[in-house]
Length: 265
Image (cartoon, rainbow, N blue to C red; front, side, top):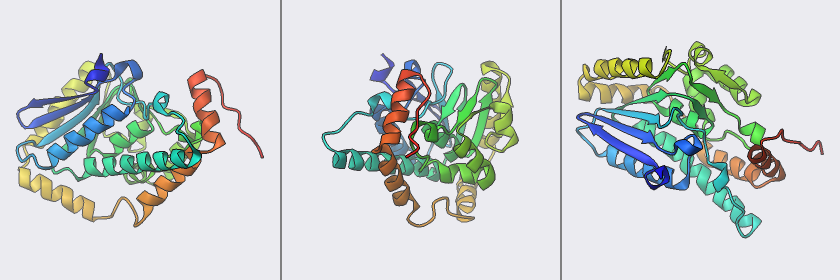
């Protein structure tokens, strides 16, 4: 079972590949997967020999976001609020950790990159996609809010395009994602994506390690992704919405594969 190894960490010289490995769930983020991801990111922070980190998904998908089948009902409303707030806070910290790595981070996307999976995409330095790639911020259709991915979407594609993607909640293809600046380069299929990835890695490895790390630091210094207090405010907003009736209906409709019915009251 891939749930026994929800994240594959593969090393090839200076290149480390983090492969999300829950293909039966389109690599949706389980607690086990993100715990292993956090461990891998912590190890990479002190790794002086790795120069490139590639994030990808197994089974033809990148990441479908949070695994909603793991969203249970805690014992009380207070516990539910605290649980969701803590989960969302950790999600934001994870995106920041990816962005802060000294290594150059490349996201190689096939299939769905939705919600939190879209956050992984936007926290990366370089994004490559195959023709099968699809991108979405569907939180509002689940009665939730894209609290922690919104700053990263805005950094990657600008406020206007990020707003449309989050408010419309629709799915866009690789061509549209490239047009709005979400994706840097595309390939027609998986084989083409692999070749494009190899060429991109080769280009990056032509750069001096120290110069690359310093350049990443200068790019970060051009403007903070998260305004002061945003991470906590986002976690609180997510928790409030996740604990309410809209999220209950949105998640239920997703699990039951039907349209959500929103109250007008």
